[in-house]
Amino acid sequence: MPMSLEETTLSHINVYLVQGDKGYLLVDSGWNTDASFTTLHNYLIKNGVSFGDISQILVTHIHPDHYGMAGRIQKLSGATIAMHHLEKGFIEPRYISMEELLHQTDRLLITNGVPRDFADGLRDATVGLEQYIVPTLPDITLHDGETITTGRFTFRVLWTPGHSSGHICLYEPEQKILLSGDHILPKITPNISVHPQSIENPLGRYIKSLQEIRQLDVKLTLPGHDKPFTRLVPRIDEIIRHHGHRNMEILEAIGVRTKTAYQIAQQITWGDHNGWRDLPPFHQRMAIFETLAHLEMMAADNRIDKLPRNGIIYYGQK
Ligand SMILES: [Zn+2]
Ligand SMILES: [Zn+2]
Image 1 (cartoon, rainbow, N blue to C red):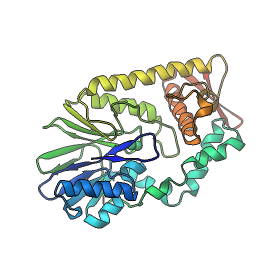
Image 2 (cartoon, protein in one colour):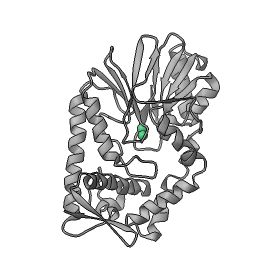
Image 3 (cartoon, rainbow, N blue to C red):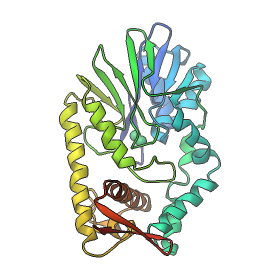
Image 4 (cartoon, protein in one colour):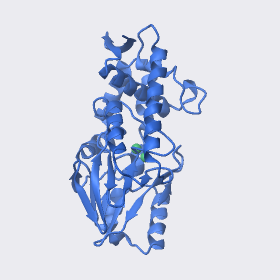
């Protein structure tokens, strides 16, 4: 069920309804706007399903577009909400009492070279997003390898950290179906960033989880955005290649001097934009934190040096 994400660059989020024998399983929820709610309601009516028929809501990760409306649907359906145990811990600091997270974000920006007068705008770039979320804790926390059976489907929970620390995919080995959330998208590369709620070396972990998924026998991938697709392995290889190219670009940007993630991010090409200066603050912050994910991975792989100096972190060629 593609649901519109007005005012964002992503256009749609796909919500999946899986028929079971004791009610339906809903995978992801859309964000909490009245337009999204009406769209979902209309899809359900068209399929002869009422909110009361939904017995489980599975959240691939707690980003607003995937998780925002889960609490509202739960109130109407009585369904249980399930997510990876790591995601559960992020709900409160991210969407309820945000002071500490803003403080941590600020420190991360400053230690990575962002000037003080510029950091405030970047730190606050996502304040307000919480209006799209009904913060609700899960009834069930999931672990890697667990199974969820509903009707003729038995899904295996695959922990795929990177885009979010507790991101999960669902794999149905009999039908060879993969619900990939934001881990693997057919057209865009998901944002992989270092941020206060990220796992250590998120890009390294992300690529490792891509390589694990690559071993699975998958006929159809159902992603969180864009259309379902069949060519999973070539798409994974494309994403891995993209990150390899980006590493090279970053190494070139470092050059012979030592630089901060903030300095390096300004030298990188970002999507269709003409350059760094044209990016809105939220995307500038993502660009810095994505650059940082590459730097952290290359430092972990011993390809570059990480050099703290007077409370600021610099990176340099070996
Ligand atoms: Zn996401
Ligand atoms: Zn998403």
